[in-house]
Amino acid sequence: MASSPVLIPQFPFLHFALLNVPVVILSLSQGIESARHGKFDPQGLVGAGAHVIKDIQEGKNSSGDIFDGVLIVAGDGMIGASEITRPTRTTTVRSLTLKPNKGFSLTKL
View 1 (spheres, rainbow, N blue to C red):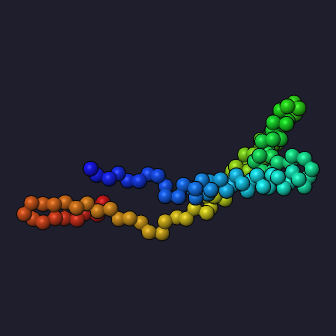
View 2: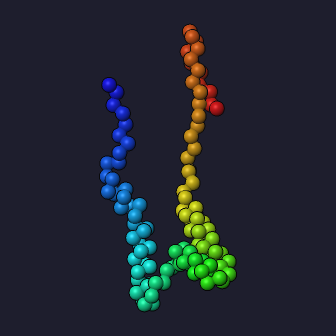
View 3: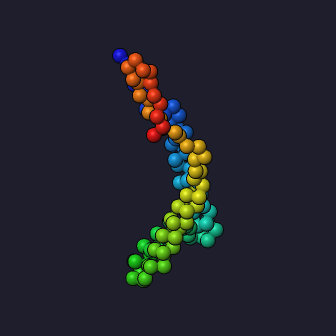
């Protein structure tokens, strides 16, 4: 019987921790700011969402808060995209053709 590849990560806790680090950092910053102001004071995208909900509940125009949320997401995306490294090497694809009694030929595609 052929062995199948192992699909379970070797260190599942590490994967879990790495995925949850941003959540922990966001929670810490929200807690620190809320404690500093003495009330719930969300920051960033959470803050923009909280302000939109508050504006809707109070019947106010929430377009500025929606704009803030879109700008935060777009800014994060642009910063993340600027960190992507472009490949410096390329792969050359070649075709190998075997010819009976004549050997083979290697053709660049």
